[in-house]
Length: 526
Image 1 (cartoon, rainbow, N blue to C red):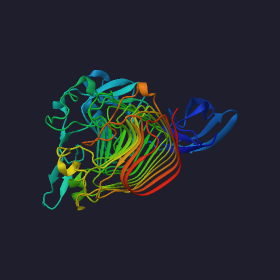
Image 2: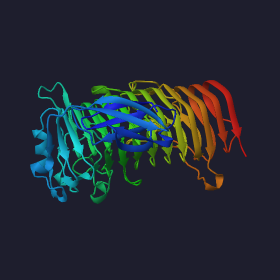
Image 3: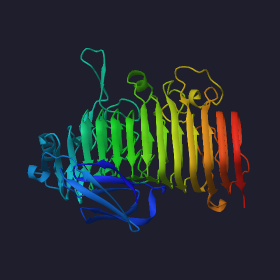
Image 4: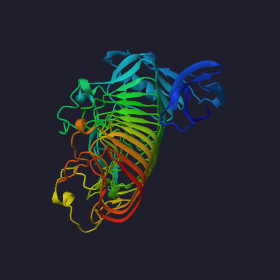
């Protein structure tokens, strides 16, 4: 079995199997380090921990009698600082914040701050550059339940010369004051956060989810927040019970996430799993997400940020992940006024989410809101109510239900008009769909440029088990039940080798689709 070493840390390695399987293999394999068995798994992406820094190890993968091997040079570590030696108790009750922050601030370049087994009850911890935060097995960083103990990060501060602005925090795309996150990085670089321990926001035992739409003091924190950071990596960590968005890289570059487990209750408000916002070069491999909102939402802020602090999100790779029990598996938008360019989602499982591929925007996002070069391929979906939705009438924000946003008649194209470019989906199997297969609704004045669907098989849940649902969150749109393809206001639609089984209709409904290319579209209605 061939494999790639995709990430090397000072005490752990992440590898990815080279195969055509999606997320996991039918049979397991074994991993040996210097002749010692370290792991047995069938997942395509795994992390091996418990290694030593500044060593060279021989890594072997054994699969069905075949052995593949390579030598790996581990990362450098200058010192290992145990937080208990700084006075942290790890008893889950004592406030350990000051002791742990002292360890972080004392950490020299390339040092590691180490959390042995225990529960460390803290308010927000602030990172510094060139360090590793290591949560060993059985170690949990647990969020303090009292919001009064959390510092606030001002959303926007005018520079002293009044010629610029200093942005520290964000709330749903606007530069609004928010509480600091459990793990906060502000303009730091070259930081690794490694497991297999747990980051627990502890929101279920506090009041973060009570009156969640009401600002109390400041807006709710994330669990992990990187602001204007570079070269940030997380590996093999469980992140759970977040007050709001769970992992939120913001205006950051080169951020990588390997084998994370992100989990929030399904009824927890706005607890997206992983939301890169105005970031460049994002990589997410081998990660499992189950949350109360979108599993992943790729964003770039609202209009003010795009106008005054323009930075699109570009070059996002999501591979060999399992995204389950959320509103959308992978969403682009809706706070994407700066644009989202070049997203590749491959070899993933979408399981039990409301929507699979979910693109959402609206009038008012602005002309810089260009969502383009978005590719989904080699995906398995099961129990996803609506596999593919593209919506340019998304009714978010205080004015979301206004006539300006929701009027389905053609309006003038101006500086507030967003653009959806090319969206491609290919080589997918979708079982137990409910409302519809594809629902795409562009603006009449700015149609979706191109939608291309190739080699797609969709089968529907039995009609006795389905319930009608509104596939896109817009006004004046009726629920659907077992529908196949609804496309409206599209410049170019390509349907190639599509099989639809068990739908309530036998032909697509296409309205104001300028160019259509349909080849081998098969309906099977038993």
